[in-house]
Image 1 (cartoon, helix red, strand yellow):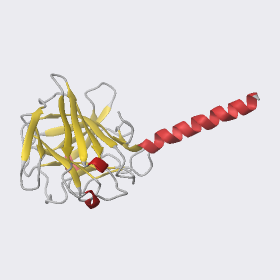
Image 2 (cartoon, one colour; image 1 turned 135 degrees about the horizontal axis):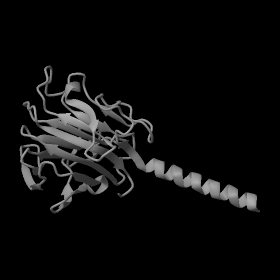
Image 3 (cartoon, one colour; image 1 turned 60 degrees about the horizontal axis):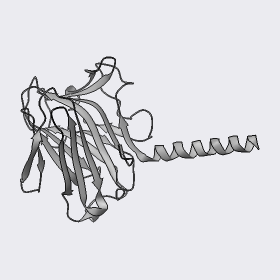
Length: 238
């Protein structure tokens, strides 16, 4: 009887672990990387198949650095002058594994910004051309959201330079809605029940590779940077 119980406990644990793994779409924390190097494109650990993508031309702007938290590492994305950049090769992208895009999921990342220069574009997408939302962050800290493809924007609040913040996008594609939360000192920012950018949800890939993309507006700056501590995409509510 004891042997049967031990077998059942082991089976239950295996099932729970497998269940936890299937909720993870992407995880990137940079701790296994070497300071001063480019991040590995194939992300280590679970899940298998998630990745960072960036062009050869963009490499001078990307480097693994020491985190502001002692003993940890981060990924610094700068706006330094870099030759060979075009409208299509400037994205630093975190691409999740293939999954059912109609299921609720959460995109979140922790970072700080600093320096003077152009604003940062942050896209949440299906991993192809279909955007859920696009955010903009200026060097003054103004956070805004694209409301349509004809140039409409809405100011959401302010993230001061040097302030660690966690941005969470909670997506329910079946309802054509998402929520946005920014956790930070000095007051959080919360936006609820916003429509996804494409009215027709059939325009989104399914299965999809849920992704987060970062890009600087055209221009260059020696001081402007965005330092990412971690990027996660999951179907488990954080």
